[in-house]
Length: 275
Ligand code: NAI
Ligand code: 15L
Image (cartoon, rainbow, N blue to C red; front, top):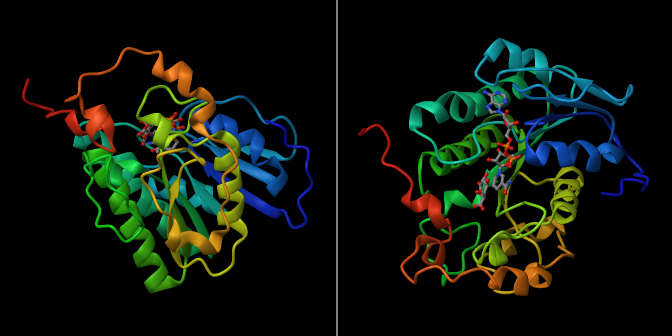
């Protein structure tokens, strides 16, 4: 993705967790204009820093002390690290639940005023695909992963109410190079639109705790961003250009969860631990 444009007020130092992951690798490039220094962190190894504009700091989100060291000296946090799919509760607990607590506690102790939280559509995954939701629709998590993101959103509300730390929680739909199936024709978020949404989330003043759905300008959207209008997010891409390619795939059965629920196959994962 092109990153050549100049930003008037880049942050001095931004922290990106999950930097070795699928989105992390993309954001490592696309966030460059927004910070003099991008601190890149993950539990997994990643490519070394290219120059002084990057800092690599390996960190396990379950390690409170390490997270406190990680957050020192940053102006804002883009929290993308953690388990990103449905897994047994015990695997999610440390990285996603303790991890998000460690991030907010470290933000409080180091005076960081803004967090961008990579939440997920799986906080509302049990709604049917013919329903339109906004940020005030009651959450209906579709598994332990969705529950952990729901908890992260509550953590964000608490840290704003109690300590004034602002958050934009982005309920990302499906952010991949292309929509991979029929469901993603509704949920797809292009990398360029994700970057625009992060830019708006970093620079918009007085966001409190804002919840925004992260989807491109797709036909047949299930999500209404009326309560995040102050962000000024205006997605430019659309899944429509991939429609023919996706619709050439075999049609799933009518009772397949991917055809019924907003969370798709996640609603049918598990139970775990019965084997
Ligand atoms: P990913 O699984 O590729 O990246 C997540 C990264 O977190 C990995 O590099 C992993 O090593 C790291 N991580 C896991 N446990 C950790 C720990 N204990 N300590 C430190 N780092 C740890 O996922 P992806 O697709 O890049 O997603 C990034 C974020 O966005 C995740 O939080 C995910 O839940 C969220 N998201 C992504 C969506 C998408 O469509 N890609 C949709 C909705 C939410
Ligand atoms: C997510 O939350 C996952 O992190 C991602 O891998 C996709 O499964 C996405 O949701 C989705 O719902 O398509």
